[in-house]
Image (cartoon, rainbow, N blue to C red):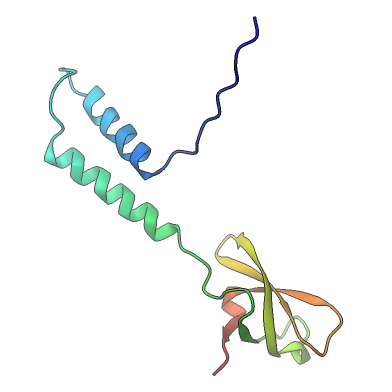
Length: 118
């Protein structure tokens, strides 16, 4: 009556390879046929393309950065800020929550608006 719950772990890179290879093998007429070099190359290319998309934040929490605001927003906001929190990407850019010691509030900035302080 009551089924025990089964926790599933997120699929890792090995699961992606197994799934892609199983698709290649299942597309063949013979189910026990070996995986071809072309199929393995296709899987490798897929994983490399996926890894290029999955990148990490450029800055880390606690790091001091230079913020350059766009002319549309407040141009006087440019200056030195400290990264307070890493935020998820907004399409093209990762976002950060930053704070200037002279301001009572935090700002959200895109990665393209930030650079390392020298």
